[in-house]
Structures are given as structure tokens and as C-alpha cells.
Length: 99
Image (cartoon, rainbow, N blue to C red; front, side, top):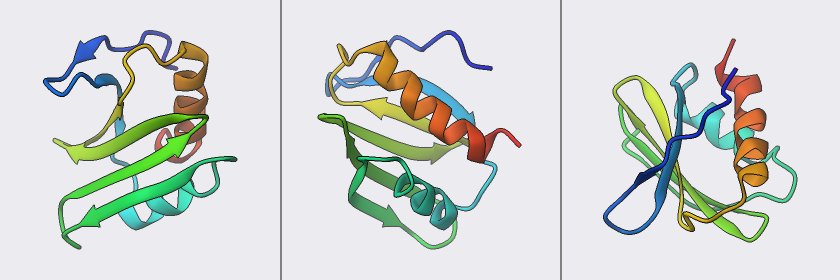
């Protein structure tokens, strides 16, 4: 169970807040975003084989997820996004990725 969030600030000012195992292919990952109540996918780029980048809005915040080194890396544009929102996102994806 994830209890500690990353506090990694990116060059663009966003916050890398968690990594989760890349346990499913990215089309299933994208479908799961749509099951998060209130989430809206704003961009989805995939090469169809290895790489994916997905952006979505949730509770007034912009999130992005990319797959790297066997994990999905989660970012939030506003580094001051409340932790309860970050944990909502984590809890939603935990059901898919931590099998």
C-alpha cells in the first residue's frame, strides 16, 4: 500500500508523485481512467507497441501518466494539489495495477 508520495519536481514545475507497476497494457489503462468518476482524458498518445503518454483532468487538476522502465509514472501539473486528490487517483489505479 502506498502511503508516502514522491516530492519530485520536474523542470516544467509539475510534480512526479507516484510510480505504479505497468501491470496492464495501456489501452486497458486508458479505459480505467474513464471509470474514475469525474475524470476526462484530454490527450492519449501511444506508439501501439511500447510507449504511452496520457493526460486527464480530475477535480480541477491536470494529471499525466507515462510508462517508463516497467512502471507507470504519475504527474500532477500543480505541485500543490491536495494530497487527498492524489490519493484518490492512486486508490483508483491501485485496483487495476496492484494485482
